[in-house]
Image 1 (cartoon, one colour):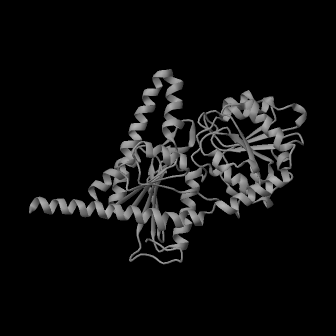
Image 2 (image 1 turned 120 degrees about the horizontal axis):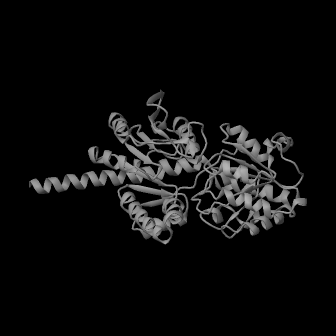
Length: 415
C-alpha cells in the first residue's frame, strides 16, 4: 500500500508524476482543478513527492518542497487561448529521465500517453496509470469527422477506437470517471480498470456565497430564473443549444442566462444572442468569483452530451443549484430526478420546458437536496484515498510483476 487511510505509508516515499495537455495557467478546467487538489492532498496527507508536467508559455521548473511543477513551452490551442498543446515530446522525455518517477499518471489521450510509454521502455520499473477522462472517440473524433466528412467520418471514429485500445492496453492501470466509460473500455479488451469519482471543494462552493446583487452587477434584467453555465463555449459542449433554449422560454418568465467561459463559439454566439438577456462574462480565473456566481444563480444548465464526469455540475450542486441537462454521458448519474431534470440530447424545447418546471416547483427544497447530494457522495479526500491506497498499489504490483516476468524469461534464455 502506498498510504493507508490512517496515514501510514509504504517503505519509502514515492515520486508520482502527473502528465497532461489539459492544463490552463489561469486555473480553470476539470483537470486543472484536479492537479491543484491533488497537490494539496499529497503535501498535506502523504510523504510522497509530486512532479506535475504541463504546457506553458516557456520551459520552467519550480520546486516547492516535495512539489515540482514543470512547464514545457507549447503553442496556444487555436480557438481556446487559455490552453496550450505540447508537441515537444523530447523535452518531456528529458524531464522524465531526469526525475525518474515511480508512477506516471497520464491525464489526456493525445501524444503524451505514448511519451510515458516510451519512457517506461527505458525505465521498465515505472508504473503507468491513465485517467480515461474524456470519451474522445465520441466527444471529439466522431463529432468533428462527421461534420467534416459526413458518413465517411465514421472511419476516423473507428480508427480512434483502435488508437484507444492500443494505447490504454499499455498501461498498468486505467481509471474512468464512471461505469459507462469503464464498459466502453471493457468492450475494447481493456480490463485493468477502476472507477474513480472526483470531488468538489464543498467549503468554496457553498450556497452561503449567494450575492443578491450579482444579477444586476453583470447587467442582466428580469426577476425570473437566473440560469448559469460554466465551461468552454464550443461545439463539444453544445453551447449554442443554450442560446437556442433561451429563445424557447416565454419573455414574461423573466429568465436570464450567464455563460462563464471562453471558446471557439463565444464571438458568434454573442452576436447571435444580442437580443437576448444573456451575459458572456468570459473565462473566470478566480475560483471564489466562480463560486459566488454559481451560488447567486437559480439553475445550472448544460447541453453537453458526452460528459465523463462533470465537475462543473457537482460544483453547481454544491452551490445549491438544481440542474437542467440532457440524458447523455455521465449526466444521468450526476442528476437524480430529485435534484434536476434531463431531456433528450439537442432537444432545446424540452430543456426550456424543464427550466419552467423546476422554476415553478419547490426550488428551495431542491436546492437543499442538491447540496446534500454532493456532501454525501463527493469529496476530494475520498478520491485521493482511492487513488493512493487502491489504484496506485495495483499499478505498482503490475509493473513489478512485469519486470520479474521479463527477468525470468531472460534467465531462462541464458540457462
